[in-house]
Amino acid sequence: MKSDSFLLSKRMISEKFSLYKNKKFTLEFKFKHLDFYNEIYYLRKIRIFDLILSNVKRYIDPFLKKNKLIFSILLTNDSEIKEVNLKYRNLNKPTNVLSFKSTINEMNYFKNTEQEIHLGEIIISMERIFCESKINNVLFKDHFVHIFLHAILHILGYDHETDSERKKMEKIEISILKNLGIKNPYA
Image (cartoon, rainbow, N blue to C red):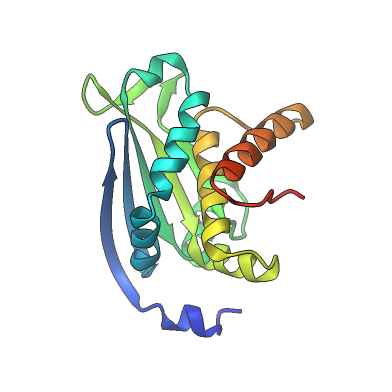
């Protein structure tokens, strides 16, 4: 699947950075290996991040609602995410996304300033997202938005380790995606 013309058209880069800000959130995008800057720029232009984050606000802890929240997002390839997955989860395979919450404990958040909290880091294999979107016959943009939302919910404390946790998290994802005009990915 790596031979697909879309992925071949992505030039190899060392690193690129894009910052997205609104009143309550900052998203720090870093691009490595494959340049998906134009795709992220398009999502910014159609205000998809505003829509995602305004929908996510309902599910944020009241303490966090008072602060500006920062997420760091690394967009990379299968090879790099596989290395991270092995190092931190002892799984020697690529995955579409990894989320790392930046808390010391549940009450001690990593603060940039008194009003800014760095909530966590998200690593997304754009290569994996592209391949999965083709396999599942969904738009690349829609699959990326779903996985991005999924990662944010993980950082906010939602999980899918038990059946009840999974159902709760999926219900939130389905609701937010519906508000964004994206079909239920679990149907």
